[in-house]
Image (tube, rainbow, N blue to C red):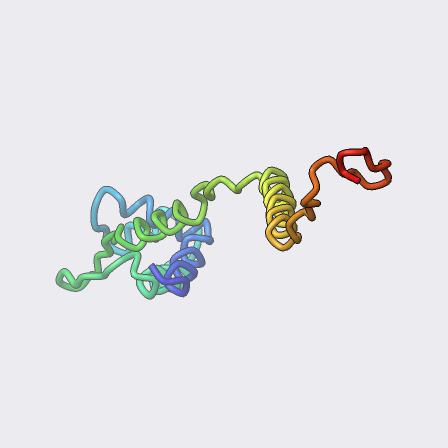
Length: 142
C-alpha cells in the first residue's frame, strides 16, 4: 500500500460516524435508509460520509431497484493493517557501539605495532661477539 492510499484510508476511518458505518456494513450490504436510521444526523450528512468511504475504497454501492445498497470492502483495511504492522515492527538490534569502538582501537594499536616492526632497521650486531660497548678489551680480543 502506498503512503497516499494509507493516508486516504486512515483519514476516512478517523471520523467516528464513518467507523460506525463500517461496523454496520460488516454483516452485509445495507440500504442508505437503514444506515440513516442508525444515526442522529441528516441523510445528506450520511451520504457525504458514504462518499468519503467510497472514495477511499472502503465501501462500494450497488443499485437495487430504486435504492442504493452499500457493501464493506475490507481490502483497503487489510492493506492499512499490513502497512501499520510493517511500520511498527521491531527494528533489528543495533550493534553495541562501545564494543565496536574498543575492537577498532585494539586493531589500530596492533596495526601500528606491526608497521613499526616492519619498517624498523635490523639491529646492529658487532662481528666481535665478546666486545660490548664500554667494556675493556681483554687480552684475547686485543
